Image (cartoon, rainbow over all chains, first blue to last red; front, side, top):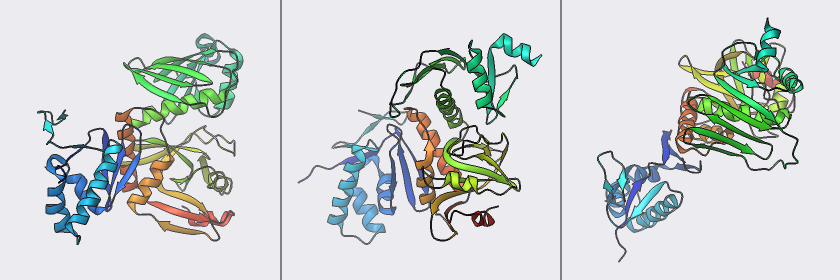
Length: 105
Length: 270
């Protein structure tokens, strides 16, 4: 059984919704990403305290006509791709946040 | 009096986008070269927002692909490429440049300085020709070969060219304005030093007929970001430029302009 994954948005990025897409730019290397509606839902729910399973079950499967196991596979692939570019962080434990709102390692 | 001022200062003020930059050098020939190169953008004002002293060095054999590095450390910017090295203190807004008497080097440095200045003013430099017609500015963006020089060359007599290569955009009076620049492309014609509110941005494509299609915000944003010039490895400034580009496409109409390279394309502009 796979460990639960927590996903948190990085503070090293800039993001802006344009139309029905979420545009995200890495401040580190200026790489630009655009997320579709489903990916945007995951991105917006990535608070570092909610597991990817929960996001898929309570958000993706509620808002889109998709089977849960398939949606979770896609969500994991997306989260790992974004993590490779520093757009999100992944962990097996919830992220700890300081009073300033920044995640603590 | 102005000649006396020049002699004393050994420098000129190059004012692009209402941002005066003084360039000082002890080399009269280089100074005259700059005055000719930046005709229309040179003034003799005492005030300059930024000051640079230029130390001329012997020419070096450098490749066109030499890496450019633009970094900020402890409030001091370092701009470095094979043909130049410049340092610039953010607080005093002054610095120095080491380069040969090559106008392309200082042209690159000025572009970089203006990208840094504009990033904090809701603006940017973008690969685009631009022109003013009937009091409004129109931008024509695209990579090399997309048609920037062609559209500039085809401009009618009642259109004033701001640039055929690098457009200067800044948020102003609740909208966006384009300013003339001396940054030239193939046309090698310095733009007029004027500004006007931007009416539209066109993304250029050559095709079998003239056609204008509106672009949705996401596509417009991606296209604009792909054409913006920004060189600094600075996460906070990258975020600002990204925000400016997104804001721009939210407020200024963006179109794809497919055109046949003849003067009829301008019947659809302005």
